[in-house]
Image (cartoon, rainbow, N blue to C red):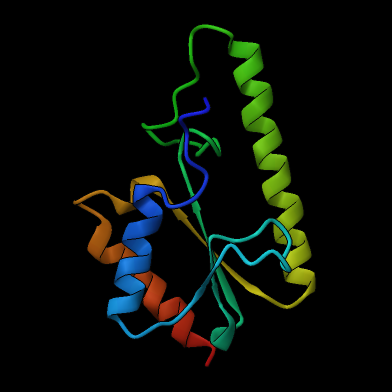
Length: 127
């Protein structure tokens, strides 16, 4: 597991690239915000969390499959990740931040265009 990246993952780099191409400027992993969100758009008071379907237990997703070995350990780990996500989102909402969650499966070739249209619309919608 030491090989698993927590920052600069492929999905994160892809989202950052598209945001930058569309004129959005952002900060990465702001330590002052709960959970150090992946992307922080201060101008829009919006954070973008990019979740891996496996690591964050994306329900109903074909990419979230519980391993057959050490099942209890993995379920505890994934459930703890979900719990931490809920706590951080609650804290961000209390500070009046808008939260966008992008799942890894939404960045696949067949859905990526729709996903980016949705992200850009949600960011600019309130401003």
